[in-house]
Every structure is written in C-alpha cells, then in structure tokens.
Length: 126
Image (cartoon, rainbow, N blue to C red; front, side, top):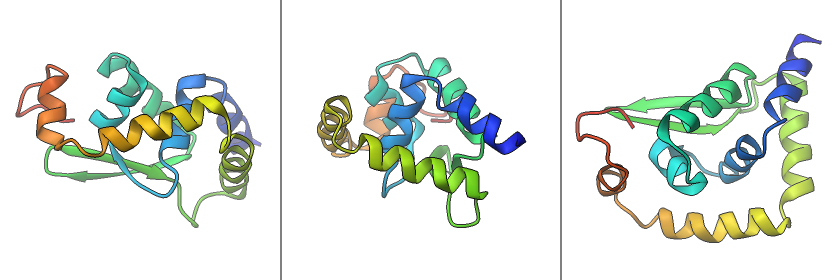
C-alpha cells in the first residue's frame, strides 16, 4: 500500500508525468530535463526527487552529471504497472508528442553547453 500511495502522489503533477514520459527508452541528464520542462533547476530537482522517492526513476552519477532513467525490472509491481499504464495511456498525447519533438532537439546539444546555457557553473552538478 505504501508503494502504491507514493506512486499515485508522484503521478499527481503534470511536469513529473512529462519527465517520466521523456525517460521512455533512454536516460537523461538533469540539465536535459530542465531544458525540456522549462522550469527552474531547483523545481526540476524537487520533481525528480519525488519521482525517485516513489521509486519510479533510478539515477546514475557520472562525474558531475546526474542521469535519470525509468525504474528497471527490479522495481515493485506497483511501480512497473504504473509506468506501463502511463506510457500506454499517454504515448500519443499531443503534449507528449510535442515534448518528444523538443527532446530530439535537446539531445543534439552537448551537455556542457546545455548546462552553461542554463546559467549553471562548469563545476556545478547537473
């Protein structure tokens, strides 16, 4: 029940749902998610923290970069079911399709340039 409640709370925000949908089949750096959502870095960090607490996403740190991906096969059944339902329900949603197109452009950017364009310092974790 606890996992279920955490998942439902995490899915209660449009920006968190958009972030989850962006992670389908790939991992993204926090700076790429910030660029996609067009929100303040602290706001996106908080959203991603909520998703991580709900165990909907996993993280990997590589140097100064923090990468997010959808929770894998070891995730709780509630989490796996929620991710599958979300992806199936929204894959053709016009906002998600628009995000997918925008993300294709974002993925062309070098992470260092993207981070700098967001006004973040070179030694700051992205």
